[in-house]
Amino acid sequence: MINAALIGMGWWGKNIAQSVQHKSKQIHFSLGVTKEINETQEFANKMSMQLADSFEFALAQPEIKAVVLATPHSLHAEQIIAAANAGKHVFCEKPLTLNYAQAQEAIGACASNGVVLAVGQNKHFWPSMEKTRELVNSNILGQILHIEGHYSNEHSSKFFSDWRESPAESPAGGLTGTGIHLIEAFVNLMGPASQVRASVSSLRAGADPRDTTSVSIQFVNGLSGYFAMVRATPIFWRVHIFGDQASIEAVGENEVIVRYKGGRTDRHTLAPVDSVKAELEAFANAIPKDFHEGDISQLKTTPYPISPLQMGQTIAMFESIVQSVETGNTIGVPA
Image 1 (cartoon, rainbow, N blue to C red):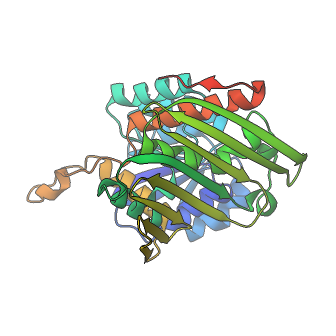
Image 2 (cartoon, rainbow, N blue to C red; image 1 turned 135 degrees about the vertical axis):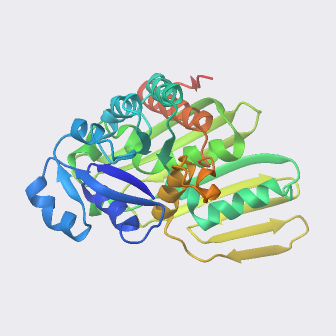
């Protein structure tokens, strides 16, 4: 079992802790880092976690093998690099960083220090998306032509905090909250983008914002795509891939609809999973375990399903979308 420190214990940090603590055989949090120790102590007691107020303290503990970052986006790059330099494996909540140069530096630091880097994109682990990838790989689509998607939720209403209205922490109409999940899915399914054009329509700023974001994409392989997102509307997820023989549509967490040429339709309703637990255990399973005599299975690892290359390509598209919103121009995506 991987002994980890949870860095950041706000709303989402607590969700992370609750997903695995006393439930997982792969990862356990012995330490939590927060600036609000008094306010967090009761929760930490329930989770059997000690608390500290210093990231550096966590990095200095030899028994801590990994850190999980649920911190402000602008801190991710420097924290990933510091953890890698301290020899700690790193799981970082999305977005990995806020620009491509930082992503390359963070990925490089983990590679040069020989530590595992994972990014928290829990929608990747939804059964609907796992089934979608399986079906795409089965070649039922024929020639792939186009992809589109939509992801919206009510988090800006339910869990508003100052970072959600900050252009620095949450640019392009909250792209860090919802759109980043679609970017990752598109990169994973279609490959890297070559150019993007995006716009934001805002109806209300400040607490509980009202805005919509639309993004058109050209991929390196010549295919097209687009996605949209709305803040403060009931949750909705859709990723739809079109081919000349069929289309595959993932709707929500657990449903996939396949429409074949000629009119046949298949519907797949899948058993739910805890996607946060799944991604954290995938991270733990990617970390080489200490060898115990007689237990050769401890040497086995499974690579994290989002590769460092895809992490970088995701942030390259993310940064280009932000630039397009800011300039009103079509932006080339760095390779």
